[in-house]
Structure formats: structure tokens, C-alpha cells
Image (cartoon, rainbow, N blue to C red):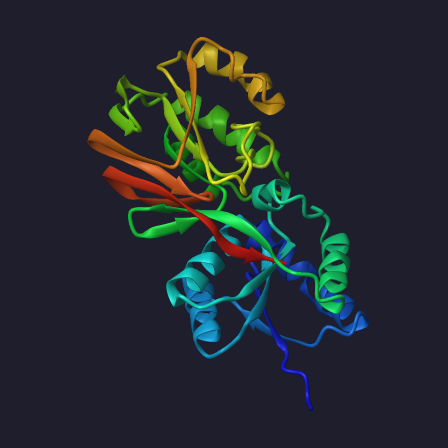
Length: 299
């Protein structure tokens, strides 16, 4: 009986072109481990999500994704929209690779392929990972609303090959452009936070922007989100907070509040920027967010 190839989806622009430069080596290494696969190249934003949805709906029970957090974001939305059971394997070829860090997947693609091949060959059961839902979109690593989302949008426009430092440059550009502090109301459990906020991060994993430990205590398999809010701060204060954000030691600062929750509602008095897993979303005023415990099966 012939073995059905595992679909391998990849985004050639992930990692500012890193995926396109390395995908041939990825396929060669998979072949060397005897992992039969069929390569599917993303052609535009949303293409990978559609093709993953089609593959899973057609019966694929295991898929691989080679790319960054944006590629994983599309794949997860394709999987969960299908309502089918499928195992996801990730090969990191992105810039920040926040999700793979949260999942203790090797950040170097060669090591990740070797680990995946080992798990597939030994038929090791998949791990269960929590997934977030914001309005009608799924996310696996985190949602950001406010200044964090503005910085994410700036980072998307920077094409320098400087790795994680692209997000640091984006922060500096964002500070120069102006720190936004939208007036928001955040409700969860029996609590309400109301007033101007620099940013609100709903974290499933610890990392954002590749180098910032926005929620160092976050675990993506504990059935909880970590809500990290920053009160209005000056440009200078953001600069002094950056080293603490990198180390994850900012949580105890007076401007920061931290809560653990399973769902929340955020409302802004005017449309504000937001992102899911580093993917910029349309400007919105209302956000309904909940956690779906163990919704994703990860190889």
C-alpha cells in the first residue's frame, strides 16, 4: 500500500525570504528521513489558510507548515474552520518564531525537521495546545491591541534582513511617530479596567516580536490567557521599559497590570489597531476573546 504524502505548506516570503532560500534544503532533509511529502507554495495572503482548509476537509490528518508565525496563524485558522481532527507539524522559517519558542520547538529548522521526523516515525501522540478566538479569528500565540499592534504594522513595512531586531527598530519608529493611548474598557470575570491604555496583550505564549517576553509566565497548555496591560507611558518610559520587556522583568512595574483569564471583552471608544499572532487586523472597536482549551493537536 502506498503512503499518502503529508502536505507541506510553506510561505516563500516568511522570514523576509528565509523560507524561499531554505525550502529546498527542508524537503531534502525530510526525504533523507523518509518523510514523504507534497509541497504547497503560498501565493498570497490567505492562500495558505484556504489550501490548508481544503486539504484537511479532503481528509488530510497530518500537515506540515514551513514558515513563521503568520504562516502558522493561517494554518491554524484553516484547520479549525474545517472542524476536522488534524495534527500540525511546524518547521520554523520566520523572523520572530514566537509560537515555536512557546512550544519548545527548536528555532533552527534543521533541528525542528529532525524532531518532527522522529515523532512521525515513532508515531508519538500529538500534544494538545490551547487556541484563542477573537471575534471570528483564531490565534495561537497572542492578540495585541493598541501600541503593540501599531508597532507590528510598522515592522511589516521593514524589509531589512536583521532578524528579531526588526521589531526593536519598529518600536523606535513607533515611539517617534507617537505613542497611542486609546480609551478602553476591559471586562473579565468580575473585574473591569477602564481608561486610557498604551497596550493590552492577551497572551497564550510568552513571546511577542521575537525578542520580547511580554508574558513570561504564559503557558499555552494551561487553559488560561495572560492579560498584560500597560497604562499610558511617555516615550522615554517606553525606552527604559524595553530592556525589561526583553528579559520579562517588566511585570512588576507600576504601569503594568497582569491577570489570568479564560475570556474577556474589550471595547474602545474609537477604532484601534490590533494584531493576532503578528498579523495586523482591520481597525475595530469591540473585541470578544475566549480560550479554546486543547483545540490544536501539535506534532
